[in-house]
View 1: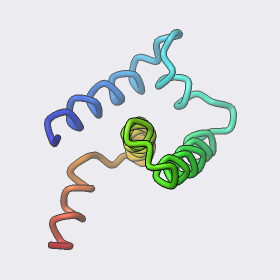
View 2: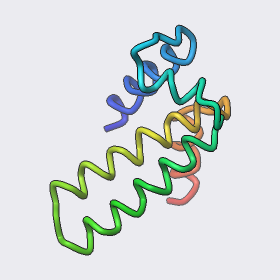
View 3: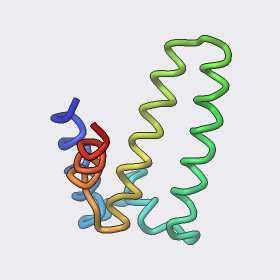
Length: 94
């Protein structure tokens, strides 16, 4: 999983730099609400994950979980952090 997170984060960083017009990721970096747009998405996706778990919907749990991870990576990029920051924190909790 580490490899896919690194790859996804690299794409996010690229979108942050190049800001392609047709990119959802780029739109998060340029949104008029600023980082609040990503924070709102994290809240929305968290609620959707909870509801999927309550319904025991494994497919939806995976989908919403992926959405949370994606938006978390965007937030990390906005805060000039990266996947290594998450890994270090998780390792410290072993």
